[in-house]
Amino acid sequence: MKKIKIMKNVLQANDEIAQNAREYFSKNGVFVINVMSSPGSGKTTIIKRTVVELKKLNIRPALIEGDIETQLDAAQFTKFNIPIVSINTGPFGGDCHLEAGWVKQASDDMDLDKIDILFIENIGNLVCPAEFDTGAHINVVILSTPEGEDKPLKYPLMFTSSQVNIINKCDLTEILEIDLETMKKNALKINPKIKIIEMSAKTGDGFDKWINYLKKKLKK
Amino acid sequence: MKKIKIMKNVLQANDEIAQNAREYFSKNGVFVINVMSSPGSGKTTIIKRTVVELKKLNIRPALIEGDIETQLDAAQFTKFNIPIVSINTGPFGGDCHLEAGWVKQASDDMDLDKIDILFIENIGNLVCPAEFDTGAHINVVILSTPEGEDKPLKYPLMFTSSQVNIINKCDLTEILEIDLETMKKNALKINPKIKIIEMSAKTGDGFDKWINYLKKKLKK
Image (cartoon, rainbow over all chains, first blue to last red; front, side, top):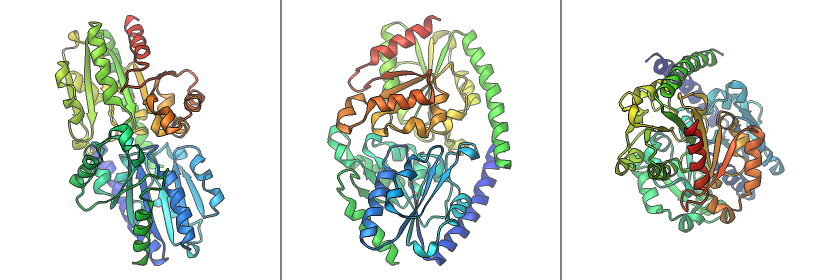
């Protein structure tokens, strides 16, 4: 029981920092999106493609890149010439999620006047990141078709804490014999309000819907 | 800093319980295998097929099935008529890993005299389960080809704490344009001693190597 109590205190402290960070980002005109998924679901590929599309529309993106070890993901973004801060949680004990305090601290190294939209690429993990508010305005969970239809039922907190569910690698649906309708039904069963966007970050199919969603969010 | 200190105490307590559990299992002639991976890498499918193959050899398997929510995975095993205990971590705060105390407690509901090999299907998570010794004799990490070649580098603790790395869904290697050699090199870079077994749990390719490995381990 003691362990759970300690956990609650950590979560409570994080929630307060997150709320303050969110207000700070709003005041500075920066819309913040926390992107979560299992390892290999396509976070980096989707954010890369999103950055390219947003730049075409003169929307200025930035990125906070979370990884336990390595800067492999962050390195993929250098060619885009956007503000990037990399957080390696390794030195903090290999933490399995990002916390609001680290996100806020990372953003202190960025000139917010030059940013319209800030992506947070969370640690690849379908469990723990859902428990920690990062200070983002919306949470996006990516589920890729190879992971299977049942995952929303088995990892419900990730789906109740997200506003958007991107279903990625839809180009593999037939080969993998995945029932996309069941996958969507399961996500909606856990969170009836979640917005589902089907796409293939590889082929670009469905990407227009995601960009339109972001454009609408930025107008508000 | 305080948080990390607390974490160390929790880990230390778990390590002691795990060591005692491991000795208890050895004394009772039960070989225990902790199976870890991301959600959807194929843990359940591989264990199901393994159970079928072991029963053919008159080796008596049992299963402790970890899930945050649902008993969907455990339900798939009822037809095999083997001892199964399901642990849902939801009531413990949705924990993202299994701990040795819970494993030991679950095994108390089993008749160990009738078990040769006990599988622990850990929570689907490539991060946290690696930190918690379950009391198993060996740890197996499953990495499936759709997750990408770089994952051992990005989630190193999972690979240093495992003795076996099953690379699953090898039937998809060509379609996904995955470089299997790089994936294996990355696993060996993190842990030069790790035994790599390539397979497709769907087609059964490579499964004989896995069964042979288990047979050898049981003879010791």
